[in-house]
Image (cartoon, rainbow, N blue to C red; front, side):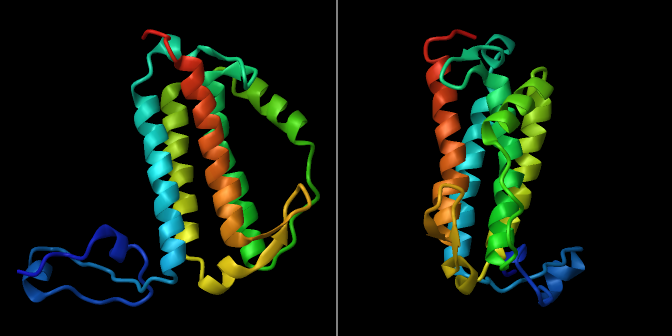
Length: 194
């Protein structure tokens, strides 16, 4: 029997390609979607790996570690993790809009937004944050996989006034946001016993 297509192959289909008869007889129906862009798939894979690293790390945190103060961030580790997960949708929606030629709304004051977010989610649990990392991470990865090479090459002006391609915005915005905050969490927990 032919092995079923990999999960990566199956989630990007726009056309139905039925599996072989034996697999179908066993109840398997695979939907095979052609890849929109190998570059987009690679970006989504990079994001998926980074998110999986954060999820794996957070799953192992004790309650004490979850509540540890992250000096560089000015908030607890748990609030930083929530911020990472919530940021996926914010940055993902911005990337999606720019990739589709939709202008962004006026920028809000990031410091005020982050302070309000930290206050509103100060008691976020690990389970809530893990659910958000998985849900938002999956949503954004799927959006990234759907981008075409043409969309990745579009340019936009960053909030700091730099001209970036959409591909750069993914790498320097979305992935860098995740990585930067994750590094400060790891540094804050260095030497903190569970």
